[in-house]
Length: 373
Ligand code: GAL
Image (tube, rainbow, N blue to C red):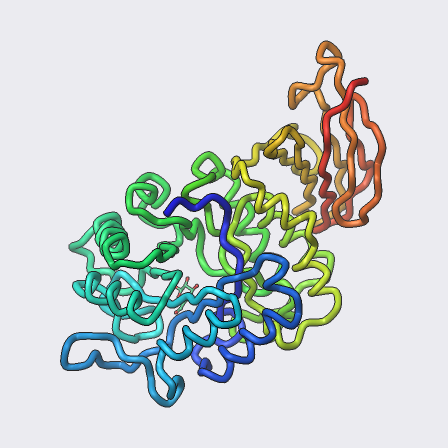
C-alpha cells in the first residue's frame, strides 16, 4: 500500500483520553457522517490508548475491555465500516502503552493478526516503555513487517515523536506517516512549538510517508484531556492551514458531536483540504526570509499554494517576490491568486505578493495559477 495523500480522520485521545467506550465510538461515527466530515474526506475513526484489558488472554492475545466495549472490536469495526468509514486502533512498540496497558513488544506478529481479524485499517504505534536494549528502528521495522504480512491493508502510523533521529530510518519501516514531534495541547504556544520543530523536517516530508504533526486541536476550546487555554478561531485557522500546507495527516481531536459553526467551517474548508490532499504530495518549501514566514508548494497540474503565516506575537509584513519561485521578469509570467479563507479573487499579481500587515498568529492562504503577464 502506497500512501498517496495524508490520511484524514478523528482520534479519541485529545478530548477523551482514558474515557472511551463503544457508545462514544458509535455516536462519533454517526456524527462523522451527519456533520459532513466524511464527505469532506475525514474517513478514519481511530481509537487511541486505553481500550484493552490489562492482561492478555491465555493465547497471548490482546483483549478489548468488555466494560468499555461490550460488543467487542469486530462488531464495532463492522459498525464503523457500515457508515463508510475506516477503523483505526492503537498499540505501542514497548512493554506497555503510554497509559500502562499491554503493548506489542515481542507480540508484533500476533497483534498484527489480531488487528487484521477485527477489521482494523489503521494502526497508531507509540514509543513508550521501549526497552533500552532494543533500538527504535528495529521495533518499527518489526511491526512494519508484521503488518505487511497480516493479510489486510493497514495504514501504519508511527508515533515515536521524532526521537532517535526517526527521520533517518522511518521510511525503511513501512510506516505511512510518522509523528515528527511530541504531543500537542490546546494552546497557541504548543502549536507554534510544533510548527518551529517541523520547519527543518520538511526535507523528509512527502508522498509515501508524511510527517505527522499530531492530532489537531481545532475546536477544542480548552475542553478535554489535551485542553489547556484553548485558542482563538483565528489561531485554529492558522493551525489548520499550517497542518494542511505541511502535508500533515488531518486528524481531528475535538468532540465532533458538539462542534460550533466556526469549527465546522475551518475543518471543512474544501480549498484548504485540497492543498493537503494534492495528488502530487510534494513537500512545501520556504521562500523569502524576511517579515512573516512564507511557504510555497507546487501542486499537481501547475498551480501553486502560498501560505504566509505569522507565528509571531506582533503583526508582520507578508511578502513574496515572485522571482524567488522562478517567476521573474524573464519568465514573462504572473500569478492569478485566490484567497482560500475569504474566497476573494485577488486578480493578477506581478513581481510581488504583499500584505502590508498580517496579524499575530494569523495567516494568508492563496492558491494561484500561472498566467502570462
Ligand atoms: C502518547 C502519544 C499520544 C497518545 C498517548 C496515549 O505517547 O504521543 O498521541 O497516543 O501517548 O497514551
